[in-house]
Length: 418
View (tube, rainbow, N blue to C red):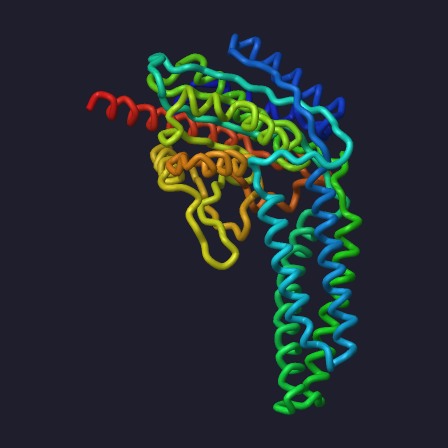
């Protein structure tokens, strides 16, 4: 296949950008300067925006762990007194209600919450306008985060602990319901506090101890500046750079393309939150968002994968047909593109614009996320190195995206002719 770009450019970007790029450090300044230089050399219209962020999510997450710790500790104490274990129902109700309320508030990605010392990071934004500058045209937003972060514990251990903790907590709540009902029935002499009761109570108590130990372990984890972030996410930065150059040379006919390199993603999606918080009304005014798209690139390593279905128990499709269009583009070019199912998703920057568009009922706005799940065993560690990145996959992702958005643009043209 004849390529319209230097086939070594993307992997060379990855190698050059494989240094520590933790938010609000010299590494971040270095990557921003690199982007500015590359975009300037191609005469691509761009801007650099500084924003403030705090370690809000890290602090709130620890408070949430402490909240669970307190709940379990209270239940452990109550379990020592069988005659009052009926009170589990009250404690469970308070715990679940306040937890759901807090989660809904915390994970409203359209909300800015400052908690702790403020720091500064930067977003880099480039725009390539359509040839036809008619009003309310569609826009395609490409996004990738440019920061990197390490973790004290390996990412696979963290994922295992989260999954184990969720399952154990669910089991713990089931135990509380069984013991509380048993306690109520015993008050009316329908059942007795017997050997079977104490067997369940002991299993419950052991489960609680395991949860408490796990929570202590998680409380000591934090983000550190140890990873050079080749896969996560020098790959996304590099792919966006080469796509921006391609679109600059040959703009779309009816569709604008915006490229955003977000900062402080690893610290709680701060770059995307601040960008959309500042620019979302402008996007609504300038563009027809119900015919627009966001393609977020967060890791293209040993494979090219897109999140397709998300959900722990009940899977839901990521979008209406954007993934299908990307898959068609890949098949036409004989590129291997995997559509993966994930329990909770990648937790990347696309979630923010989904939250903003949902709030204003732009239900037809679609997002896709490139996310190589099999490479999560390397990220946030010193194993995230350039040799894990494939030149073929980087170029394949560029080709898939470039041809897909040209196809989307042709659909706009055909609709306008009608």
